[in-house]
Length: 103
Image (cartoon, rainbow, N blue to C red; front, side, top):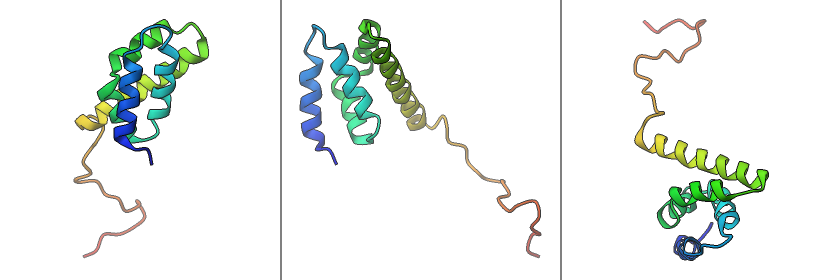
């Protein structure tokens, strides 16, 4: 497990670099999507605006693709956190169509 304070410091240092840092930002974002704590630290210290700029600055198609994929993952995380993707199952019959209800 990644130490969150260490990750935050590293990401903050990364966020303050300006020349050629787009690949590093995208690398960090790509790595962060696999761990919720690291993803939260990335968003807090680097931010999605910086990731968007990094994607725009990237000239390498593979780097740009990874950046777009990471950005999409962060946006999905936000939707889920807001509850946009959760549907309550109230009233949903989970038995198969072949089972009879109990009487």
